[in-house]
Image (cartoon, rainbow, N blue to C red):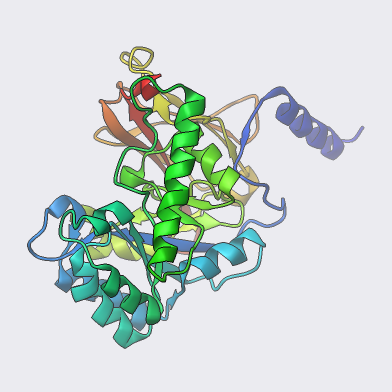
Amino acid sequence: MNGGKMKIWCFIIVLLVFVWVPVRSVAEDHCLPSHSVIMIYHHVSFDTPASTSVSPDLFDQHLDFLSENNFKVMDLPTVVAQLRKGESLPDSTVVLTFDDGYESVYSEVFPRLKKLGWPFTVFVCPEALDHRRGPVVSWDQLREMSNHGATIALHGLHHGFMNRAEKGENPSQHHDRLKNELIQAQKRLVENQLPAHSLLAFPYGEYSSTVLSVVDELGWTGFGQQSGVVFSGSDFSCLPRFPMAAGFAQMPGFKIKTSALPLPVISNGVIDPNLNSEQFETKAPQLLLKVDFDCLKGAVITAFASGQGQISSIWDEENVGLLKVQASNPLPRGRSRYNVTAPVLDTGRWYWYSQVWITGTDHNY
């Protein structure tokens, strides 16, 4: 057996020995799959909390940059449909999404995007609109935006933690309750003369294996708040979006994210991002990524953890393309992320991948 065939058989054996959670297969000779950057905003206002806000002035700078650099701003249903089918998208495709349906989306965002003729998506919680919880838009305003090209989709029935079971619920009961809530929420959209898009943004960006199983069972597409680029090989039950708020929305970073490319991840070892607090109180979780090593063309991988800066990212010596990422210190209670990036050689662009971790919920089972 010659050296080339030996390498192929070694690669196959590695895949058979290790059990991986599929992200979706990518053609081995296709290092630049069809992809899109999705941005997530909440408030566009001077007067709301900085942690979830972008000022109107900074939002104008975002729109000016996209316009002046000929980005293709597309509607979310079309992007999802084309990526699912493996159809090509323009390399500069961007999608704009807004969670919670705050009033500033109608007063600040809608006039600007209507003038530009650009589509956008608003993820809403029907119960919040029904009971006017918080500074949210009205059903009439949603219908007006929908009539001018906006996609109105779900952020859950209410803004609860989908990944957490209620007291006394077992996993099966949690699954059934969540499924019924989502069906009820979509029914409220239809009752208010809005199209029933099969798109769901997870409140707080938190999800679990139960949440993802419900999304898959319904045949929907789910969206988190972990950063990264959506591509034809993504897991469509939990697509990434780049959060735009506070320091993450400033122009230098915005420019980098709009031109980012998907890290060529073939699979990961994460079944559920919710970590048992006792198991990980003294040790951070290890992320195992199977990466198309040849596509990187020698680019150096760098990983970061929330609040810890750069962390360990090591290629496994025995398994080609297996990247092991782990923070040095235990993760705090709540949400944390590992971000994995690498420069795309000679382009000024970056590969990007992110994994969210949620510590201390323990599902309540």
